[in-house]
Image 1 (tube, rainbow, N blue to C red):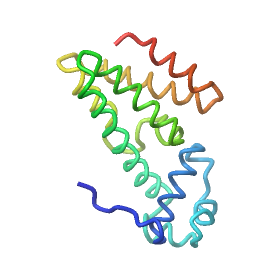
Image 2: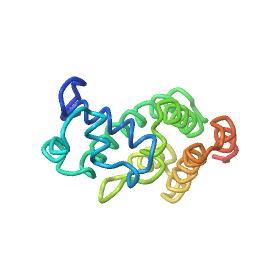
Image 3: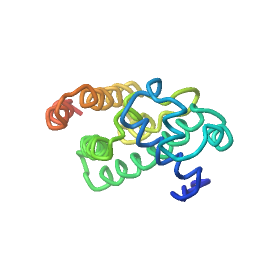
Image 4: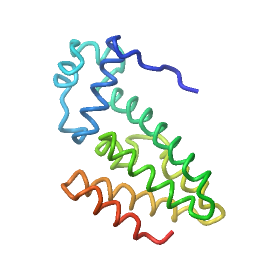
Length: 165
């Protein structure tokens, strides 16, 4: 269960919404605290007050986006039968690219957080051994990175479909 659902008009909610947009469009290191504060129409102090740091804000929105991603992927897998993994990866890819979450999801989580994508793939692939889920997650993230680097969504989606799983 979620601890907090952002109210978009509150300073914390505006920061979360601005962070999703900024961190989705650009790598973490390219986004400044000043840009985040300006996009949310708050002072930089609000970032530290609500999230402790830029990394705290990033981790907060990253986890929220991952939860939404995994919800969609698990739903697709549930109805896809023997093609559960393929359906999950394709639906997740379409969601991530369609919502502009590229840079939020191209890397595994920062720090000690669990990798929800790998965990979900391990569950879908059971009883196969763990590296299969890690390899598929890496391929999925590589397809997102390709789009972030200028490859068309359709070409990256076709490349993802070429994985044999």
